[in-house]
Image (cartoon, rainbow, N blue to C red; front, top):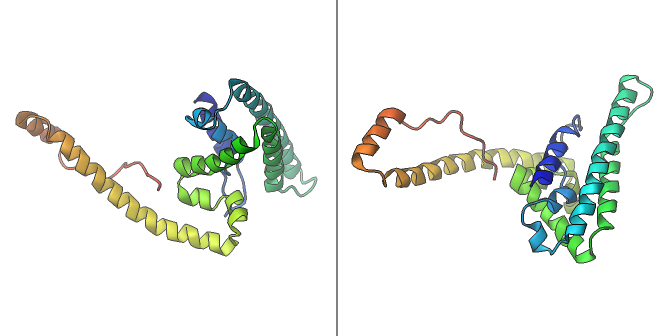
Length: 202
């Protein structure tokens, strides 16, 4: 679990400044490897986990160094630097190193789980508009923009239904209290608050 959280933090914070319209959290084979449950699902050996951990730690150092250099060159106006190219090259190198650790059938499932990891963590729209999925589906930039707009409307609908469903089950739980306890709870809580609700992505 620790490695999985580290991967997620790196995907969010170690690769900033990607051009607008592109996902900053491309599906990662590494995130799938450390996803809880993956080990049992595809029979990953402890030795494969250890090798993957070493590859990832080396890669995280490498990407930090190369991105720092790229930004320095960009700030110094030495040359035009496409940060997306740097990130894509480093991800390709990481995937190549990971593919040397696992068997073909394990790699196939890991690639599938990488997309599920993306969807479960960041929502379906992040997964569908990631660079890798765009290439897989052959989605144009205009189509990706349409997906994002459609997702905004669906997200609002989803949040409304999720809020109502949560309130339904909260009420069921509260009904298990005694009448006196429910009255005391009502005095302290009042009506449900709609502000500060966590944004749940579908």
